[in-house]
Length: 210
Ligand code: AMP
Image 1: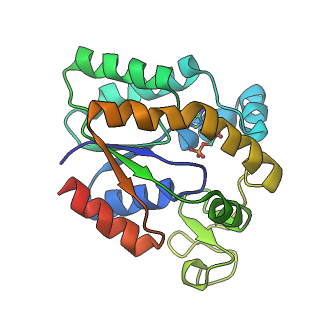
Image 2: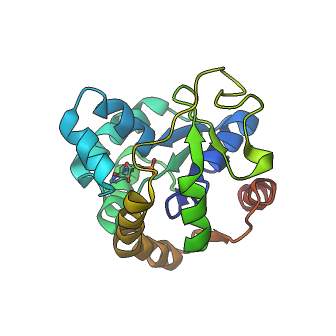
Image 3: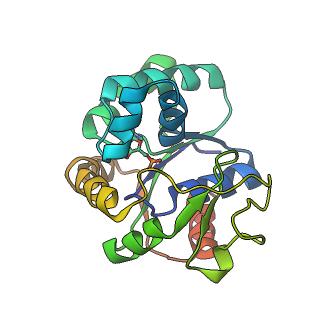
């Protein structure tokens, strides 16, 4: 199976697609957002930086991720939320050359800003398995209000899932992450998904990695 890089604006569904692919196909999902949130539990400064909606330094993110990738061996993996800048893409390309791994495919989830804003302010997640739910969409509500269907943990809202922080994160996305789309298009490995429902996005992704 090909390794996958997911590129998308905030709340486009990277986490959901990544979870489906790992649950159903055995991919390992590497979410830099989850790794940073975990690291921020013992690092107040990092916590504040994430809460501001700004990107964390390339060096910090890369050092956390590099170790994980080096320890993976031949298991196929999905990068969820990395690279976020062209500089990170270059660092990643150099790492792959060093460890002799193929880049695989880049999946770009293309979702309009208005839809993202709606999603972000109605999203709750499980702090344990990271599954994401929607308070707005009937199909994505938990069975029991406020409780994760799978691990029965109390659902929480992410500290950066407010309208104000979304605006900042979206600005960061436009200025720093969108140039990646051109970068990977030039490399000839970018595949775009414009579907909106979870099932359609998953079906499109299966066709891409087939
Ligand atoms: P996410 O869970 O992917 O939406 O990421 C949440 C937050 O973690 C982002 O708004 C950034 O502050 C930080 N973050 C996650 N991945 C990266 C990355 N590759 N580079 C820099 N910051 C990141």
